Image 1: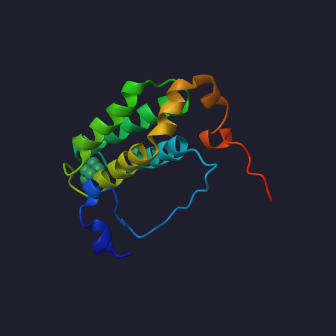
Image 2: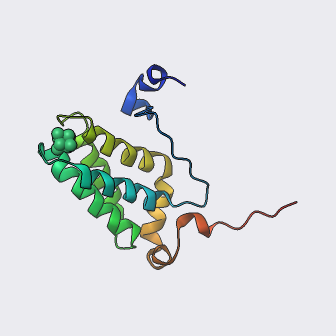
Length: 139
Ligand code: SF4
């Protein structure tokens, strides 16, 4: 795994090494909740100098908050993707891309979890998506 091999294609191929840091989640973790947490960080860190980052990171944080708390709808999932496209490549520093790409990747790879938060509003307020799975039996 190298910066070059993952950067080839970047957003289009769906991967990047970024700053080289890794966060590993097990299957019990909620992707929507963790994506919202990323979005909160980037919205807080945006310096506000360029509008796609200043406005977009805040919008993503609000939409992800709605989804995580059972108040979102299917349109919100596509709205997140649209906001991503407005931010990507349109900011002065890399923070804009760094904020947009994790959200885009989360939707691309875990769309079913986002849709669960819309279809199971009450459940999504009570527990994480990962915890709806049946416990694995130990043979
Ligand atoms: S992309 Fe960088 S310069 Fe632009 S508002 Fe965000 S943090 Fe500031």
